[in-house]
Image (cartoon, rainbow, N blue to C red; front, side, top):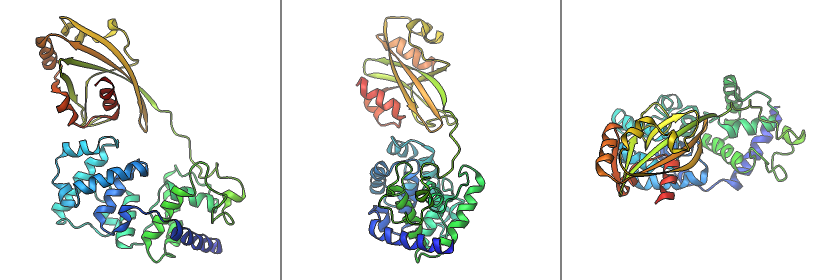
Length: 355
């Protein structure tokens, strides 16, 4: 096994030297830049993440500029990336470091992981890349590569597996002169070569020692328990409009899309598609002439699927519009004002279709 580890590391170094990705945050050891990239790239594909990274880096070039930003503006800048707690934690941590440490990042994994929004992976990535600490960054790439190459059949969904793979990586990372290069080489190897599906085994530098390739187990490794079925939810959005104005509502902090804006919502066991099925409270409020139409949509999040009915209620009386605004605790905005606020992607997609 010792010989196999040496062969693996030697091949990985050769591969990384030839195939290392040219990424903007790789050109610096600045912890702010690395941290920003790590948070943006959580749950985000590289192509999309790079666009947002460059935009954020230009608008917020350093920690202080990010800490000074307004929360509502940051939410709008983040719009489209999803998982909005990431940017809220990003803002909170920027302010904390600016205040507590005078803008200087902690330099160890143990201190970094104490910061809001920085977990085991990100703390190890920042500590190794920026401060050369020998701390392995364990993510899906590492689970996949090590499982396949060394024939590890541990269920990676199990909490105990993290410790096993971390210890396994400790002996490997010490063979790199720069700890950050070890972690980044695995990031790249998993993203470019040892793909989750259809890995490029034919020209892989590890195929002579890879257990999965030799035993044709690429689809079986890593071992991972099946995901739980997605929770299905049904959102009925009432879209009240009068001339160029529309009524919106800010979402609470205890559900999906916390802090973003959407429309008056009624969640039920199914979508509303008929005029006679609309909310009784709404029926009583629309006392004068109006038109009504329905538009369907759906969106899938990591843990739930949301089926949506947009119930478009076009009003022709200003007093009715104002009464609805007051009674349902909504806010009236024109389209220009609405465009400045952060909204869930499914809401933005809907607004584009009706504009």
